[in-house]
Structures are given as C-alpha cells and as structure tokens.
View 1 (cartoon, rainbow, N blue to C red):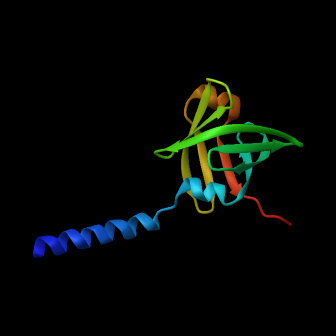
View 2 (cartoon, helix red, strand yellow):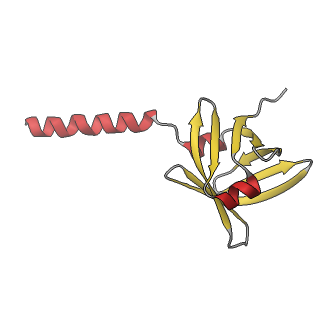
View 3 (cartoon, rainbow, N blue to C red):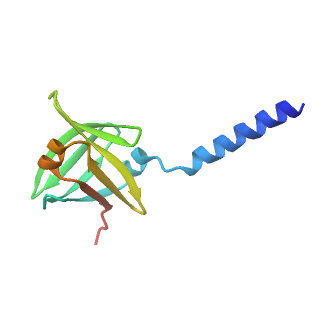
Length: 118
C-alpha cells in the first residue's frame, strides 16, 4: 500500500511540475516579437505552429522552425541549410545565442521581446 501511495504521489508531483514550466513554443506563438540582433539589425517575428515570419522594412521572410532541448533551428523553405540558436528565457524576453561562429557572423545573437502595440 505504501508503494502504491508513493507512486501516486510521485506522478502527481511530476504532473504539477511539468505544468509550471514555460513551453517556449507556445509562448512564442502567443505573441508578436521585436527582434534585436547583435549585428545591428532589428525586425519583428511572428511564430506559427511550424513556421515563423520575419518582417523588416515591409519585407517578409518565412522559415520553418523546430525547438528541441532549448535549441531552435530555422530552415528556409525548400533549402537544405539551417541555422540554430540556444534559447534561454530572461523574464519576458528570450535570448537566442548562435550555435556556432558562422551563424553568429551571419545573424548575430538575438533578443526577442514581446511587441507592445501602441
């Protein structure tokens, strides 16, 4: 009986803890984002279930993306090449650190902050 109670309490604790964590993908999909890059670029991003649209100066560019183990990987539609960033949450913002020097040189490290409509 003690073993069954222990297993039941452990399952309840795991389910409760899982609900406390932030689901990055859901959070990204729920807002429009300002993106600022360490290379000096600034633009907006809007995330869908599997795609993201970046907009700068009225021009839009779309990518597919995946998030696995706090690493987001973007791939331009129809292209083989992809680029990845390590994602960390900082209050309401997300920091995306380039996975390698080539990605950093091309895109910089990124900060995503929720866009406030005025």
